[in-house]
Structure formats: structure tokens, C-alpha cells
View 1 (cartoon, rainbow, N blue to C red):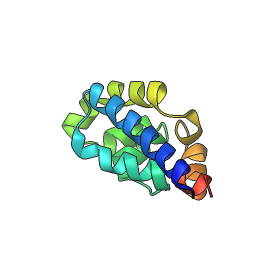
View 2 (view 1 turned 90 degrees about the horizontal axis):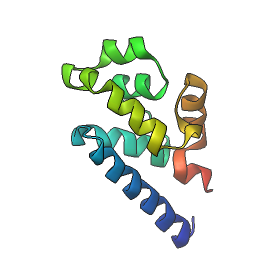
View 3 (view 1 turned 180 degrees about the horizontal axis):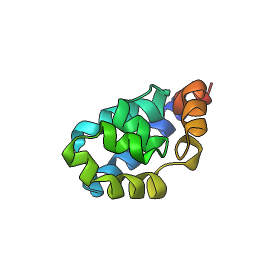
Length: 106
């Protein structure tokens, strides 16, 4: 990957991180999302369910704080993240297979 591509991915992640924070989502959850977006590394059960559009799984795996924030998570992904990587189990798995932003640039 070139320096230009690396910089572009870092800028994109920084923009998305800013949006994440602006939505009032817990900073402790950002690491799992960032690793998933950048490298296609699967996050924990709650985020996997959210990203895969699995409401039942989101509620089953989420703590009280994150369950209460489910609408904000949906707004965040809908408004701030490419639809190529979330919204269904198929898109989730394909993003992992691709290796996220970084793998897709290779």
C-alpha cells in the first residue's frame, strides 16, 4: 500500500471516529469498530450483531448502556459508514474476507 493510500485510510477512519464521537457512542467501543473497518477484524458479539443488522443478537449481547444506544448505532452506521461493510451478515462476512479498507487496497 502506498503512503497516499495509507493516508487516505487514516483520514477516513479519523472522519468516521469523529462522527462516532458526535453520535454520543461510548469511546470504549471505537476500537472494535476501527479494527473491523480498517482490517476486517471481527469485533465482539454486540458489534457483530449491530453491524450484521441482527436486532435480537444486539440485545442479547449488549450491556444496558449499548442496548439503550442502539438507535444511535444504527444512525451512525447508516449516515457515516459505507453500506458495503454493514447491514447484513453477507456484507459483514464479505468485509472480513476483503480485509477491510487496508485489504481492499492491496
